[in-house]
Image (tube, rainbow, N blue to C red; front, side, top):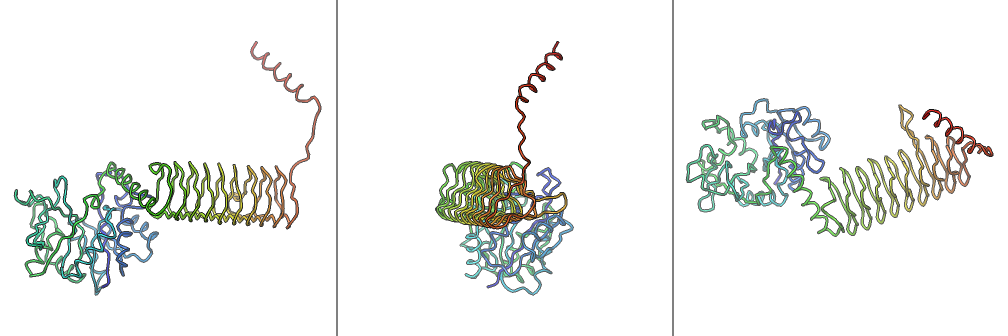
Amino acid sequence: MPAHLIVLAAGQGSRMKSELPKVLHRVGHAPLFVHALTAGETLEPETRVLVVGHGGDAVQAEAANYDPDIRIAHQTEQLGTAHAVAQACDALKGAEGDAFVLYGDTPFIRPETLSRMAAARAGGAAVVVLGFEAADPGRYGRLVVEDGTLERIVEFKDATEAERAITLCNSGVICADAATLFDLIDAVGNDNASGEYYLTDIVGIARARGLHCAAVTCPEAETMGINTRAELARAEAIFQDRRRAEAVDDGVTMTAPETVFFAYDTHLGRDAVIEPHIVFGPGVTVESDAQIRAFSHLEGCHVGARAVVGPYARLRPGAELGNDAKIGNFVEIKSAEIGEGAKVNHLSYVGDATVGAKANIGAGTVTCNYDGVFKHRTEIGERAFIGSSTMLVAPVRVGDDAMTGSGSVITNDVPDGALGLGRAKQVTKDGFAKRLMASLKAAKAKRTN
């Protein structure tokens, strides 16, 4: 059966004390709403609808970066959750299959949980609600279940004392046939303590029509919503702990996992070794048997099998390391392909470049790629040897099996097999250093007196 996602992302989040819309705050380097969409991918949804409100233009722009096909619905007034879902009606007009309502500020719903909700729908429930047993039910809405049927959801403000004693609470996540969902929403009123249109009311309406409703439960931690900076920090810690555990279970070695920080899309191959104090930004893939050494930062890059990175290395977006490549301490790579078995071992910057297989880049080498307006590329051939402290002024090519002399400034191409030298002739002046030092000391003494 086809599935469709509706992610509610219209709230202002005033408790965040931020000009940024709440759902654009990040966990694991991804906006909060992206986590809801990612969880929903397990359903292979035909349609994704993001309901935006406060800061809608910014949320829409960020959503387009994640999924250019996502549909946007606007909630210009915040009149409750049922009203928010109703804004997605036009985007799903005529859609067949189930609609899942998720929340842009609730990042930890697991794909497995959504699959169980889909199974409950397939088993005959017209409406399926995700609930959890709360350690402290507080002001959560309560799920009233009788003989295995979800009869209604009662908001705390409207609940009786007996209903407030219930510990099975509402997460807000709901699925139903799309057409049925919007038909039920049409019948929702706002005669309640808040004067809002509650999505939860569709359960009572469905039961009054003789439709079967069911509750699926999950651990309370999955339903954590983000409303404050403190909760955001706690969510980040939960996310990191979860990803570290998953990496270890997948066969990754981490000697100090608590010091390794993941992005939402980090991929580590089996038998990769991750040393302490590593930060993975978005878009990193590390292949099997690679080693990321301590105090390195990686973002938007690909590390080949058996490659070694660090310690103290930085891989920026567009860095592509071939198998068995070596990137050493205090090396920065950006928008560059480092060929199989090539070495950039220390104190170098390689940007907007191609480095051939088995090339060796000496310490202190810089590809001078930016002229203040345009970026230019450097090409270094296979088995080339770049002497220490070489400045490669792009655009320039050093050919296969070619060399540059240490301390050279290379402004012209070096043909295959050739040696390129670009440095001033050394001049030695006998005794000059002693005379200069004596003169400087005398001047200092005169100033002191």
